[in-house]
Structure formats: structure tokens, C-alpha cells
Length: 518
Image (cartoon, rainbow, N blue to C red; front, side):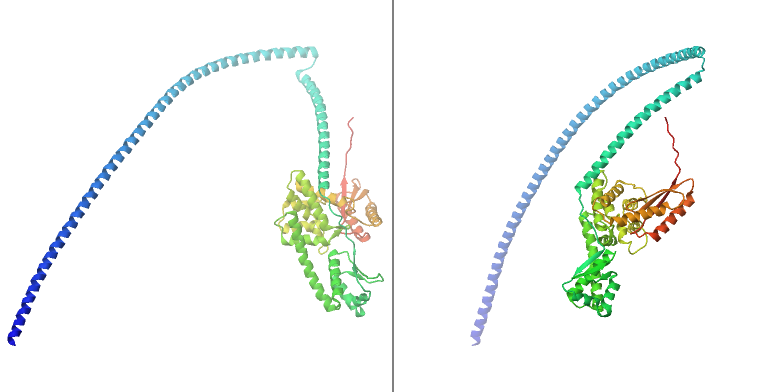
């Protein structure tokens, strides 16, 4: 058994040695293979490196050739430029030499002309001296023969020439003045014709009463209320006279204030429609209607400004424009009148070469003060100018406000156009209405008051009775007395005459010197 174990061990050792030897040979063989592959790769890399180097050398050679070619081309171009510029410089040099020769020749000619001019000047001085001597001799002969000195003869001649020249100048001046007047009249008629034919305003008249129609006369008693409480509340809140008489199916509202009358009409219509007529309900509806009317004023003003194409108007002025809808002068609606003036002024200004939009703006705002006259004391001209100054309106607008009633001169085409348009709108047939007899009586009363004063030569009521022009005798009344006279006439008119708005008292005192040239 031990023998078998020994033989097995020997066999195992022998097998291990044999395996080790075989493994070593296999590793040696693999090493040789790896070595051969590494050499092959190294050779291939070396070959590729040689190719890359060769290609790099080729590219360097190509770059050198290209650079050399560009250098030669640039050198050739510079050489050509040099030749061209050298030729140009040579030509300029030749031209400058020729110009210098020409200048030298011109200088010689100038010197010659200068010398000739000096000679001619000397000859002229000599001739002038000879002329003066002969003239003095001739004057001595004339003085001796005529018996006049030189100064006396000169004065006579100058006077005759002056008289003849003045007559000729006066004739020419009269001729051109007449032509200018005719042309101005023709042009003015053309402009007015254009304005009136291109714009035709609607008749805008207002009454002093509104009529509210009712279905049943029994409503009159409900409007009056128990012990008259309802009608008293209405009159107190609305500020109008409510006339409830035997007129069937009608209630009459009377007031000179169109705005209050319009609000009152709407309130009563809503009360009738609602059926609940009592003081508390009247107050609620009145507040609601007032708010609606205030909003409608703003909307009305905005629509008008938009229709006229105007911009940058202060919201407060827009509200006042809306209020003009509820203001009238001599039966003519103020808003309708302002719109008419705006359109007419725009047309007139455009015809005269002015600013059409500015003229429209001034025309729309020329009577803006009328929206304030029922709330504030003073002339609508002053009130309108003040509000436009406060909200920084254009100076032309302010000038137009003053100028359209003669408070100052129109300083622009646009302001003059507004004055003309205001006259057209107010004076055209049908624009304004008034009871003829009362109007004539009021005008006559105003004139009689002025004529009754001492030292008055004549008095004229003008501008639809809104101005009285008083002509005073300058020999009887001085400047200080004229001021007092204006105040006295104004005070007496206030006490004795009823009239809308204001009346301007204009006392004129002047001395005229008249003579006739025959």
C-alpha cells in the first residue's frame, strides 16, 4: 500500500513538472507572438507617422507657394498703383506750372489795368474840376440875368417838384386804397358765402315752460298732496314753479333755468310712472335724476368734443360744455349756438389760411361762461375767460372769448373768425326770438334813460339791447364825469329795466376837429 502511494506521488510530481514545462513553453510561444504583433504595430505607426510628416511637408510647401504668389501679386498691384500715382502727380505738376504761368500773365494784365484806371481817374478828376468851374460860371450868369441867388432858385424848384410829387403820390395812394377796399370786400363776401353755404345749423329755440302730460286729472291732486305737502316739497327741491290749473291732462313747469326745468320734468314723469308720490320718494327720485343728469352732461360734452375732432380739453370744461345744453340766450340754445359758431369759425379760418381746429376750439368755448352765469355773478365773458385760464386753454381761445364782445381786439385769424361766426349765428333769421313789443320797449327805455342825462348828445342801444353806446358832449363833460355818468346810467337801468344777463354801458367822450381842403 505504501508502495502504491509512493508510485502515485511520483506520478503526480512528474505530471506537475511536465505541466509546468508545457506552460512555460506555451507562455514563451505567446510572448513571441505578442512581441511580433507589437513590432508590426510599431512598424505600422511609424509608417503612418512618415505619411503624416510627408503630408505636412507638402502642405507647408503649398502654403509657401501660395504666400509667395500673393506676395508677388501684391507687389505687382503696388507697383501699378505707384506708376499711376506717379503719372497723376506728374500731370498735376505740369498743370500747376501752367496755372502759375497763367496767374503770372493775369497779374501782369491786372497791373496794366490798374495803371490805366489810375490814369482814367486822374482824367476824371480833371474833368470834374473843369465841370465845377464851368458850372459856377453858368450860375453866376444865371444869377445876374434872373436876379435870384442860387439858394432862392433851388428852393423854388424843390417846392414845385414837391407839390407835383405829392399830387402824384396821393393819386396813387387813393387808387390802391380803393382797389384794396374792393378786394377786401370781395374776399370777405366770398368767405362768408362759403361759411354759410357749407354749414346750415338747425333752429335752436328754447321756451320758458315745460308741459308734463298726464293720463288722468286725478293725478293732479296726488301731486299736490295732503295740505300741499307734495307740491311744496317738489318746488323746494326742484326750484321751479309748478302750475296745476284747469288745463286738461297737463301740468306746467315754469322757470328761466333750463337745467332745473329739465330735471323737474324728469322727476315728475318718474313719480307719475311710479305712482308713489310722497316727500321721501320725491327726494329719492330727485337725487337719482340729478346724478343721471350730471353723468349725461359729461357724456354730452365728450360726444361734442369727439365730433369736432378736438383733443386735450380739461374734464371740468367738458362738463361745462354739456351744461350749455340747458342754457339759452334770447331763445337760442347756448350749446346749439356754440356748435354753430365752432363749425362756422372753422370754415372761415380754413378759407383765410388759419388753424381750423384751433378756430373750432375757440368757437366752441367762446360762450362757455354762460354755463356759470346762473351760479356766479359777473359777465359770461369774464367767467369764461377765467375758467379757460384756470385750465390753461390756448391763448387764442381766451382772446376769442374777450374779443367776441369787444372787450379786446382779436389778435389772430382764429379769434377774428370766431367773432364773425358769432355774429352770423346770432343775427341770422330765426336764430333768436323774443316778443317784439317787449324787446322794443326795453331798448327804448334804455335809450331814454341815457338821453335823460345832462350833456348827452346821442345814445344807441346795440347788440340786441345788451349794450348802450352813449355819445357825450366833450365841452360839457370831462373824463372824470364820464366815469360817473356811466355808473349813474347803469344804476338807473338796473332799477327800471328788466333784462337777461348784463347790459354794457359805454360812454364815449371825444373832440373832433374837422376841416376841408379845397
